[in-house]
Image 1 (cartoon, rainbow, N blue to C red):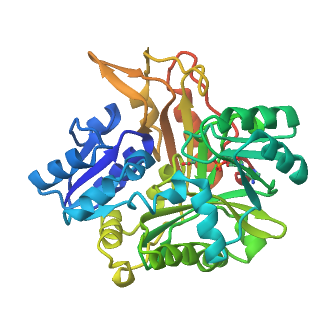
Image 2: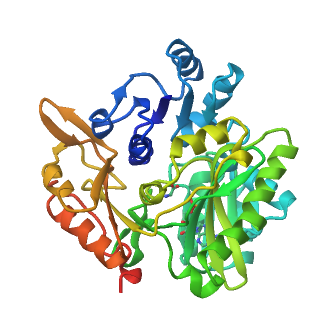
Length: 422
Ligand code: AMP
Ligand code: GLY
């Protein structure tokens, strides 16, 4: 199959790696990709958020499936442009992508679908914000309504900081003040063809920069899958997944279907497991990063068939995704200064030595080739991924590989999957 993958992060590299692992021998093109992706497939330099340009390329090159990685092209309507011309595309249209692009929209859909989520109030002025903050009390949760590249959410005990965050984001539009939810977080992905919904395997993401969940929120510093501790709480991982499928994912997809804006693509449920039950903290309309780097290596069923079935309304007739019993751990290597002001342009060395460790592979994100050197272009540079028969083995491998990589000022967490590796 000729497949066009849009995006340039480690998530897209992970998707491409999974597609290349299949026996089918796909012809894959990435736009715009990165230096790691360019080692494996062809790159086309087009703007992934320009629907007209992407559609023209897909038509001229007989692309049989477009996979949209990041949220920006979805919110820009790229999937709509492709679908209008009959090109199979994995990714929701602009309206359904509002599940991620607008927290107010997501809350409204959850309300109508009866999906459990935290109480939230949308405010438009600082007076309203302060009143709701004092009503909900500490810890305070304040969220910008629209896409904010991970910077829109503040969770804090500090009332002044909550007020300041509200003041800042109110300049850009409405703000949500939300009830604080306490409990472990789980990311669970679902494939949807607009009607049929099928789950993938759960993962846990580490959002904070530093060990012990200290420091600022980031795009995600590491992840592992599966989550063995779910069995203690829910009987088995499958019981947990089925509960989320029945009470959260299916009702959400059916609600959007009934509104004439079917959700075709990946529904990412960000969940908190509270004492009172599972609650949604956010939906995303695309694969998560770095969770994808640990979920897809464990997928045994060919990914291309699943994505195409979702894109063409035939998930109901497709075999269910199966996962290997191996575990996967990923640790993100970030540039000095990330997330506030990441340093760009430093060389990255030792990648061949890193991948010489058994069970290890890399997913590049912010890398580029300058002459014959690989340089980090700032932010989350790459994900080191290790598979193993248990978490102790996978962790040993991932950290051995990281010790072989040189990046001046590079930072990574040392406690990814520690709690499950004992
Ligand atoms: P979000 O961008 O909505 O995923 O929020 C980023 C992070 O903030 C989440 O991963 C949680 O750790 C935290 N968070 C968001 N909403 C809540 C909430 N209502 N209660 C507690 N923590 C939250
Ligand atoms: N790992 C968080 C996200 O992809 O939004």
